[in-house]
Structure formats: C-alpha cells, structure tokens
Length: 391
Image (cartoon, rainbow, N blue to C red):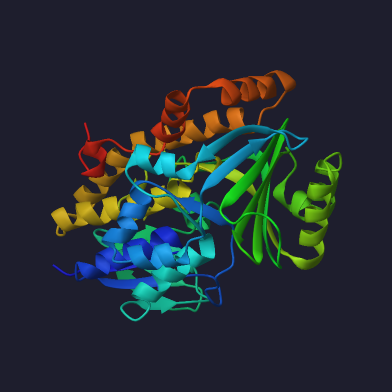
C-alpha cells in the first residue's frame, strides 16, 4: 500500500532514501532548511559498498565522471619526508570496488538531479513540531503547513534539532577535532591524483591535486574549544597551527586564505540508543554520524537509507516492524564504524610524540599485505550485512 513519507533533511541520506522509496511507489515530501541546493562542501571519499549503492541507483557512471583521479596517498612527516606511499589501486583490489574521491556537493548534486522531478521538495522549510497519533505523524512546518504522513525520516545531519526533541537518549559527542577544508582554483605543479598528508602531533594536513588547475586541502586539528569560537578565528588557527612548516605549506595556506574557498566545522559523533520512536526514524548523520575520521560517513548514510528502504519494501503495511528491523541491523554496524573512527583518530591524529613515532614506525616498516589489510578491513561489511541479515 502506498505510504506518505516525510523526509526532513535533503542531504545524502535523505535524498538516497527518497530515490529508493519513490521507486517503491510511495509519496515522498522532502524538507530542507536551505534556500537552494549548492555544490559546495568538503572533499570526501566514497568507498566500498557506498560506490556499489550509487551504481544500484543508476548513478555509477555519473559518479565516476564527477570524481577526481586518485592514484596515491603519500604520508609524510612535518618536514615533508616520505613515510609511506599507499596505492589506491591496491586498496581497490583489496575491497573489490573502486574508491571515488568527490566533493560532498558533487555527490549531493547527483542525487538531487536523480530525484528532483519525482518528489515534492520544499526548500527554506523546516519542522516546527511533530505529533504522533496512532499510526499517523502530524508535522507542523515552518511555513505554517500541517502535513499528515505514515512515516517521518529525520536526516537533518549531525546537529539535528528534531532528533534532540523526539529521540530519547540521543546526543552528540564532541570529538574535539576541528577540521577545515578548501578548494583553490588555480594552476599548480602537483601531480594530479597523487595526494600528500602531513602527519604530526594533534594535527594533520592533506593536499589533494584534483585537476591540473584545482587543489583541495583538508586539515584536522585537535582542539577542545567550542565550534563557534574556532570558526571565528579559522584563518588565524590555520596559520598558527602550521607556522613551523616549510615554504610549501606556508605558501599553500596563504594562497588558500587569499584566493580559495574554505569550509570549517567541528567533528561530532551522533549517538542514539534507538534510531526509532514509533513513526519517527533517524537516517544518516542525524542518527549515526561516525565522523570524517571513519572515512565512511557518506557510504554509511547511503547504506542506512538502503537498509531502511529494504525493510519497508519487505513489510510496507507494517511500518513499525520495518523500522524495528532497521534499528536492529544498524546498531552493530554503527558501533563498528564509530569504533574505527576512534582508532583512526589515535593513528592519524597522534596526541603525543610516542604515538607519532609509533605511526611512523609502523607505516614505514609494515609489509604490503599487512598494511593494506589493516587499511581496508574497516571499509567493508559482512555478506550478511550487505544482504540486510542480522542476528
């Protein structure tokens, strides 16, 4: 039976869910607080099952066309001395799937284009109040409109206000990592597709030559201040954090500050002991943001959307049961990727010299087999999870 489903938040998870549920014949209404969808945003890497899901959505070729070349990641110390070169091709072979490097805005644009003419999208609109009566959700919108639906998906991102109001026990853990990313459109001499990451105590900086005339940069800085304080001094923080580095980094930062487009935010990890409150369901970062340090945030958002759509397709007239199955499947998967993020923080953002030395020692001496197994083991799901089976 056709259901009416409201999706609050038209990000990656929300739009992926919209595509999948619309294909099942449901009526979809997407809300988003922004005035317009743009292609701005951080660089991300879509990996493993995330790429497979995009292919299943019919967007595999578009994803490939929009992705930047990626051949090597060169890990270097603060002086720029090579610690280890990692091959993306070798990683792809290990997981039997390619890694796609794309901006968040670029990935989002593909999803928008695929669904915008098939569902109702209300921009500059947010949820004001939600009331659940029996099997019905009554949503009051910021434009004064009242909509009744069979299900409300909350995909508002890490700082979801709806989650905070309606999902008991949910909270955001401050990961104490401030991250900045940017894009610079100008010619450069870096080899395209060969990236460089400086690893240091409490900080890292990565340079991504994504085309012959565009560079992307990302840096992570350990900091316990509030996000508003950090965003108010982004330029100063970036300059001071890497002031002891060589001319390559100094000149690059200067060019980004004067001619580039910079984004910044503070990492947070979303926790919800139950993703479901009757007919309200968390999807994507709103429910289980694993932080950028997991390397799997976008892929996990796509997977969560697909998992929920799968269970709804299995029992469309038992929405509550479908949501319970979704929560049961997702909880151990969420735990895995959030645990991976903590491990990656210890590895790639060492908090003292001893940890930095341990990173350098391992990455410079580990065998190829051991290194690639370690780096790819955290990117995959089990066969049961890929087919939505759980214990």
